Image (cartoon, rainbow, N blue to C red; front, side, top):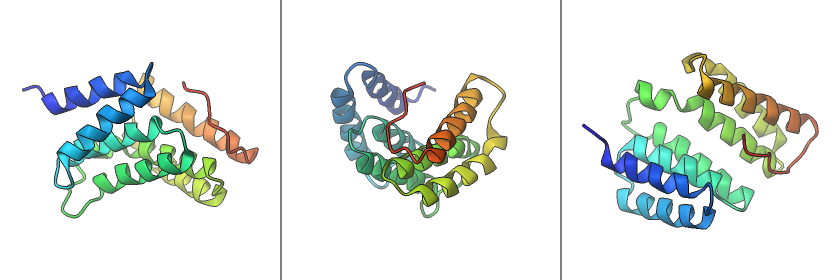
Length: 151
């Protein structure tokens, strides 16, 4: 059975490649429609992608925190689907903390992200996350707060 809500989410995400403002509007509407009691996976994915289309690093950090909160909400079982997001969620948190200048918190989030790498396969997605960890770590060494180029 197809997950129509997830299809709507990914349709909104695809907008981000050419129209971040349209993606923000569509994802925000989905976030509002789902509400606080909505499916944790849907909430996580929406917040995760809303972070990516924010102009301000503080806004991205807020959405990254919401994505993680959806995974660890009260009564939410940490199933394999949600657990698979953890390396990426912590990587994005590290990058957002770096971009707002909280370098120590960024380093801590990188350590946590690395601690969850065992859930990733040795595939293209796993390679993107592992590479992203290296990019954020390198930017941290330079104490850079600049946005990293998209992969």
